[in-house]
Length: 374
Ligand code: C5P
Image 1 (cartoon, rainbow, N blue to C red):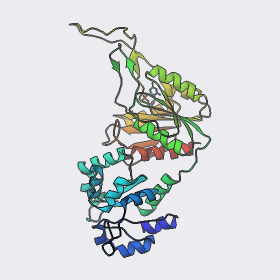
Image 2: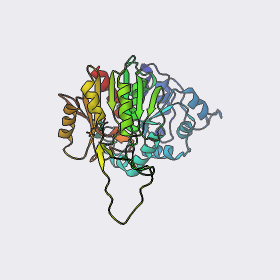
Image 3: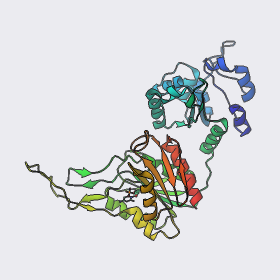
Image 4: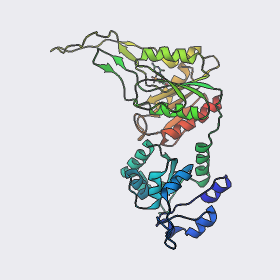
């Protein structure tokens, strides 16, 4: 089905099968559907013809592994190369996409989740495995994404729509750093992953993106202009300046709410007594931009630990935002540093809860929402 849909969508398809895959479906069937010979072994046992994993990896625009079993994902994560599918993965230069499919307990196992996180970190696109009835008869997560969804995801990756061409969007991301003295500072656990993924997704859709970035170890996404800042005050100044020419702001940064009232010019010495640090409030950048936004759009974030929904709605109103993306620290796999996130979109009238997904996928959904706002 998947193979047929890919061909209908205009793709040329070459199929690599693992030895186990042959037990489920015959190579003849796959060859007929893909209109190309199938590669299973490193060479053709009949005539010794070598199946070059390197040439296959160079030929393809996209390497899709569907279904990707727990075993294959684990081997990919560790660079094991004991079949043609895996040697091709290791030598492929194109985008790799995996559609995991397995029993729910195997899918949820820490080992599998760690392997998936490792692959995501290396840029592999991991498609969402929906909940439903599994081959084992159990219900749960671990089903392979539907073939239509896989084809859609590949289409998006290979021919991104220029749906945001002409739009100028500012994204704030990462943590701010508030100096206490020349040695110490106040900051938070934000890594900037969510904001960077959003900037990347918006730029891929043709928007002109500026990333006002606090501390992060991440690379600037392709086609994105980056303005580095350190403190909340620097971020405020940069954000106000960049918002001038923008059509939309996505406020993803974790900005310090308080900063030391005074920064000591030399290292504060320890003494035997208690030490109290006086803090003053920083400016709320989203709030300040909300006051002057006019027809421009602002998307904010809320990271809550309790009363999530009502706190988020309050922020939406008070900061004059068009939409707020709520993530709760109570959700496993959401929040700081993870490669996944579980968010709820809240705008004036609607509330949409998304399943746990990679930050790249969540970024795509946020970009969809921004398109709708325009
Ligand atoms: O009020 P709270 O900090 O929870 O609001 C979070 C939202 O406000 C985020 O979108 C964040 O980027 C933004 N914010 C800001 N400036 C601040 C504090 C928060 O832009 N000083």
